Image 1 (cartoon, rainbow, N blue to C red):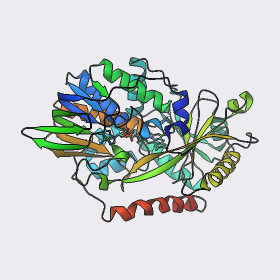
Image 2 (image 1 turned 135 degrees about the horizontal axis):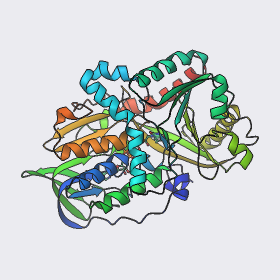
Image 3 (image 1 turned 180 degrees about the horizontal axis):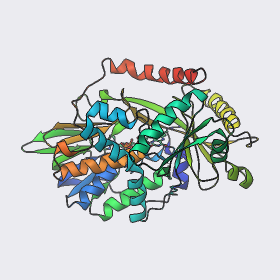
Image 4 (image 1 turned 180 degrees about the vertical axis):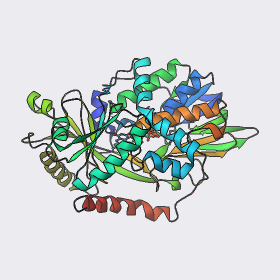
Length: 427
Ligand SMILES: Cc1cc2nc3c(=O)[nH]c(=O)nc-3n(C[C@H](O)[C@H](O)[C@H](O)COP(=O)(O)OP(=O)(O)OC[C@H]3O[C@@H](n4cnc5c(N)ncnc54)[C@H](O)[C@@H]3O)c2cc1C
């Protein structure tokens, strides 16, 4: 089975079932159209509909088809590379601290939405661990911890002994814990958001690819195979799956294929010894190792990308080796699912928000940290549509900056991920 096939993805077998949302047919008017039903678009549609906007949500396949239904499920209220002080340096004190506040509150936002809308998605909010894979990484970990602690985040440091207790792995030198983090079944969460958006009054349409967007009079005209929607406002939430709907948007990010793997369910005793407190874990490697347990005792983890035929076997072998290194108590790990999704990377590893043209806005580029942040940014875009001035948002509206020689950069980025893996073994 091909790893891009949704059936290869563990979550399609374990997420609570959802109805197929209907294809948009005929002509329709709306206040706002949201394109893309991942966390960003779903949260935008939910919050826009709750705010009273007549909202239409359009998705090529069904909600959660993109990265949102294929990820590791770790809800992380922190930047992937940066520290809070960096946000202040880049965006200034006011905006930087507003962004820090949005990031710090983003995991609570996810778990609050799950509770409020009674979503069935294996939600566990026991905290997120970032352990150091090298002793030299402890300094950076301490800085991260201190900067978030200074802003009141519920964080704590731990040493190597405590790391072993928390992770069930002997390989870490200590690390930091963010208590508001956790993990979910990401496809279940996508479906829960879709159900909540629909209940709030949004018209949710699956199997409805937007083919083009044009200006017509004072509004936007979105053309689909079987219909047309006209609206004053448009939110583009297509992230790593962005095509050519708006000139140069696709060229602002690097779409990176990321492969994930789930083991077979582990025996009770072994499962209990791994991440026994129910935490999620993403370590300090640049090509990070991420581990979390799901409800049946499988370990879900990152893996090497699949490039060629025969690579699947090699990749499975290297993942088994990695699992045995991290958790020697799993004597013979077996891989049950292998799948891939697309991560939208930006150079600065921060999401970008754009006000593209008369009432059309977009956000993308979470660089592998989009569960909590995508949900928060989706809400932010809904607030903008509902009238919040651009200057009051947590993210500034940036001009589009297409990457020069984008078609060359994309394959190069894959090579770069191999470079990071090599570097992780050395630094
Ligand atoms: C393997 C993997 C593991 C990850 N692990 C984590 C993790 O543990 N924690 C974390 O925080 N983040 C993680 N991420 C990142 C996270 O999944 C993404 O940042 C997040 O899902 C982005 O959500 P989104 O809504 O912006 O985009 P997506 O979920 O990608 O949604 C975009 C949607 O737009 C649709 N679309 C595109 N074009 C059109 C069109 N023309 N018309 C209609 N619809 C269209 C697509 O079909 C797609 O469903 C991971 C990503 C991957 C791939």
